[in-house]
Image (cartoon, rainbow, N blue to C red; front, side):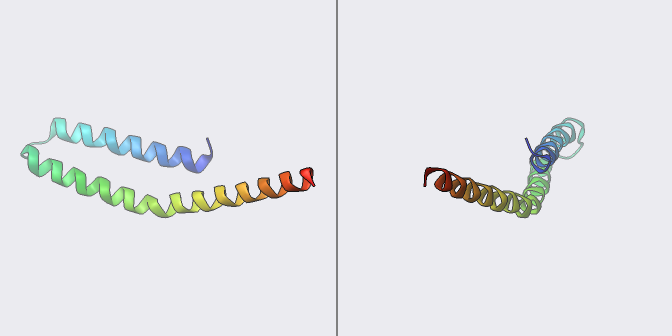
Length: 75
């Protein structure tokens, strides 16, 4: 796993753990807390979309380079 992927996975795992702890310790009603946690997780996911798009672009670039090298070898 690349460093960026590990960071994203760690953030998402931490968010899930934090949400679980918040649900267990909260004095808010269940529905109110679920809404707050859901909004917070949605914000985190939105902010990570740019990083994921960057990873996809890098992966696409690597795939293109590999295809070019294979074409060179087969030529």
